[in-house]
Image (cartoon, rainbow, N blue to C red; front, side):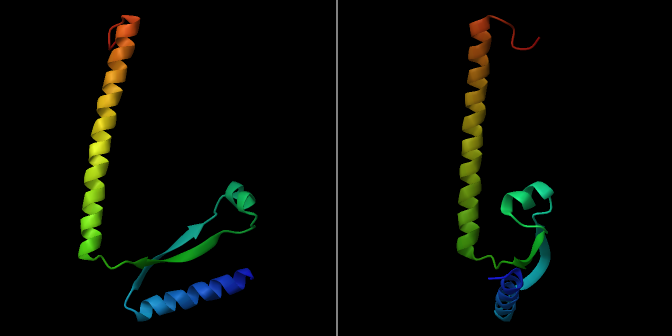
Length: 98
């Protein structure tokens, strides 16, 4: 498959999604650095379309649960880091802030 073929397929998919009511809200350019181009074996950047996703009630609930869980994880990590800092201070018998 050529790059041209891949972009034609992308355009067909975008047209199909637009016919289903989705909207193009922007473009995405990738592989803009020479290092990433070399890593992926390409000579030029690529691009794609950004589509607005319809947010359903199920999606909203799932995202809320994810955010709540991430906050719990963040709090647990902060407590762990605080305990680790305290342990390090006690091991060296040095003040916490110098």
